[in-house]
Each structure stands twice: as structure tokens, then as C-alpha cells.
Length: 155
Image (cartoon, rainbow, N blue to C red):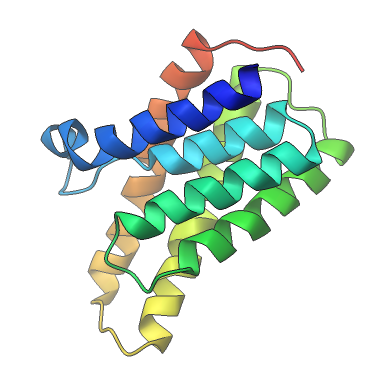
């Protein structure tokens, strides 16, 4: 039952991120709640459910973003696969490790998204690109602490 609840949470996150979350911008950036849900699903659910939730999360992010459709879905599937491989090798049991994982995933997602935009012809100034990579990843990581603190599930 918890697995289907995360689909509902993803829908709520999608609505929340395009409405209320715009009021909580820092440096004109907001936390990426989809990345937090991706990490949460990859940490707590089995392989198939984690990939299904990552596809759904990527689709929702593609629907509500201005990037080329399908990029986030592809990146989220790859990131979920890598997280699933990583947690077989490394034990991620406390919130600090989870937050570190969220930072690495958000950082990687921002770099990949920026590189894809650059190769598609969009020009993003280097300073703006660095600000997005660093501050957006940090902001997402700080918000993930609240997410992991208030939704404590055991593996």
C-alpha cells in the first residue's frame, strides 16, 4: 500500500512544485522535490517499483518543465538505476548519508540537464549554470532532510 501512496505523493509534489513552492525561491531557485521522491523510492522500494516511480516522477517533471520532453524521464531512470546499484554496495542508513545521496543525485541531475540544454542549442551563462548546480543541489538537500525526518520508513 505504501507504494501506491508514493504515486499520490508524487502528484501532490507536482502540484505543490508549480504553485506554492514558487513562493519559497532562493536565488530564483527552488528545491527539486522530484529528485527527493526519486531518491526516496530508490532507497525504500524494490527494483521494479523504484524504476516505475522514477519514470512517473520524470514524466511529471517533463510535463511541468520547459525542457525537451523526455529528458527528465531518461535521466531519472538512469539515476534510479545507479542508486539501486549503489545501495547494494554501500549501506545508507542514517539521514546524513541519505542527504549526501540526495546532494550527489541533484548535482548530477543539474549537470546532465545543463549539458543537454547546452548541446541542444540553448545558451546558459557559465555563472548561472554554476549557481544552478551548486545552490539548487544544496537547497534540495536541505529540504530532503525534512522529507526523510518526517517520513521515516524502514527498508
